[in-house]
Length: 127
Image 1 (spheres, rainbow, N blue to C red):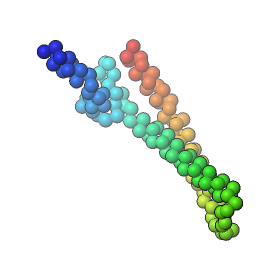
Image 2: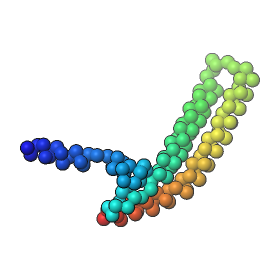
Image 3: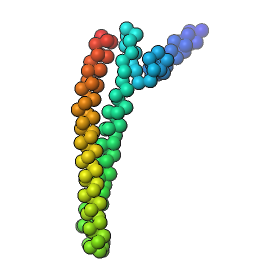
Image 4: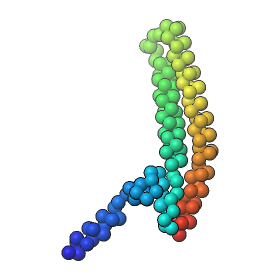
């Protein structure tokens, strides 16, 4: 009997908080101890901006590294047109990377202070 009660007691603790939040507040909310709901939907935008930045930087770095290897390979033969196309492609990737990083910086500078404030409010609520 004790095991059954312990199992029942633990299952209520193991319900994900987002499942509880969806029932009371809706998606992307945190329920504070006073029962109020705090909107955390900005986190998806902030997270996506960070993921996109990382992916674009990684793709550019891979392309850059491939270009360096081609330049250093004495056995790789390419025409002047192929080399120009490779350089142009790298330059275009650099522009895309810079644009994505600038956008991510804008998102970060706008949303991170909101996130910091939200975490402060949540921390205060649970003290």
